[in-house]
Length: 214
Image (cartoon, rainbow, N blue to C red; front, side, top):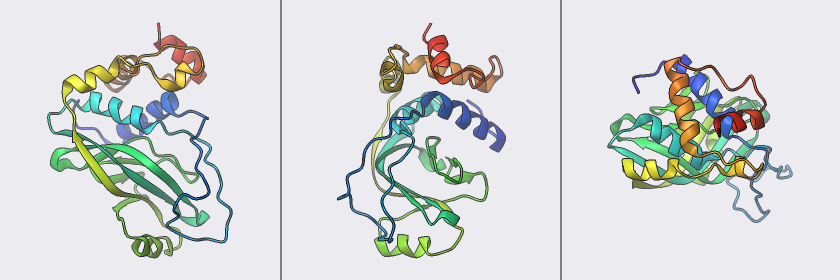
């Protein structure tokens, strides 16, 4: 895959999110450590970002010997909403010295794409921190739109491992009785980037899954 423009990154993210985001968000217990103690009730999420599936499909698109998969946590600041989305277990891809790639993020104020340690659209930014005081200070800046990452564990990804993952059925589709290998979604995204197939977003998600599972 060649170098992508900001526009093509946004289009790829939209396509992947449509196919991979599901409406069965994981539950988070009240005793999960909070980085910020606001006098607000904890609200459940509305989307399962399926970050692990996003990560492996992204790895399949990149096909690079320097790929690593990262496991850590993420926090997404929605700025004007004074809302901090917590993802206690999160996965993303690191590409050698070029930085990292994360196309799975979801937030109320938008869905930023992280590519090469830059956020798209441009009003979003990305930061790394494991320090509670530092995160709280960043959150105190009004209107800030930022994705924070911390405590990653990195594992090298071989092309064989990526290929093995592509044989696995996508969990979200399985719950709808559809056996859709991740490799079929990868193949669609490759064709979509090359312009040899159109977007799947004109269908319902279930209909798109059924079409790609054929």
